[in-house]
Image 1: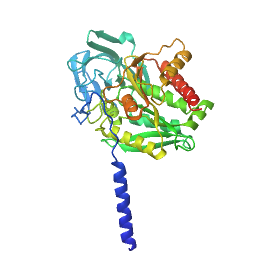
Image 2: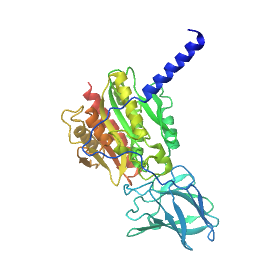
Image 3: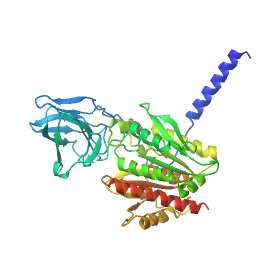
Image 4: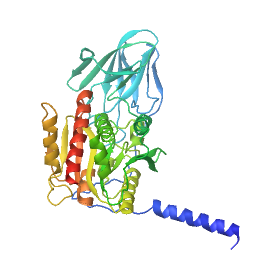
Length: 414
């Protein structure tokens, strides 16, 4: 065989190998109540800057994480802010984000308009001069389902959003800073791409030989606006990587797979809930119709097979109206049958005046905590932080929950 033919066949072999590995099927998991997760059409925003010409007031959605579907004059002092979801049916989690300014300094009112059946959820956050703050209650008016906010406009744009913007670029900036200097045991890997070409990233964390080590999976941002859960994920992971004696011992015994943004398309598109396929990715942990979940499951399965390892714990960080931990009732015979009770006791003992809010129920729909249980016989928990939980509380809960997890699991593994 001459060199030209050898090079051709070598290229062909490598290409086919990559294709086969990339298309490897992921083991499906059955659930009591299946959900149709095939693609649904979405309503794309028209990216533009709106102008109320006779008032010289502007509003724009031309940035990642924006949500503004219309901007209309209601009267000389008030505009109608029109917010629509990416598609329906959808959770009543009306997300909005826009920039606004005026040619002359003036007070101005913004009234939110949602489709019939949907209502305001999030108290507005304002970004002024690169600093975020919650709107003053004296400028937030709620009359039954009608919500209006008052702002002091100027030529300096104010960003008004349901939650602080944490775009895919912001997330990447955070985790790259976090792992800087820790690359010896934290590898940032891009294991796939979204339909819009955005990276699917994982932080593969391990000290020493990963062979046979039990695996812990951490997930967040399946639902775009759920930023407070993402903040808890940040503090949780920062604590694991804090280089304390506890964290060193823990990382010598466990292999962590941390996924810091599961739905980057939905995040950057300003979606209420879904990905670019118009689907709630946290209903696709069964047949993996959506590329984000399919590629994540394939990556996890490759890691488990390569290292002859098993998942023992999966935590999926979300946000809802109040702090709550959603757990599975099935515990006996799982990887860590006593973990949940021990963990919650540790939280209550180490966080002043804290009472764990647990909602236990075996997953019937194909959500991640059910996938951990039914697919891997592992403990699965949906870790929810309240929409309005103060940042200092999120930081403390994230830190203590990570410390208590490490305490329990290092003793379990002894």
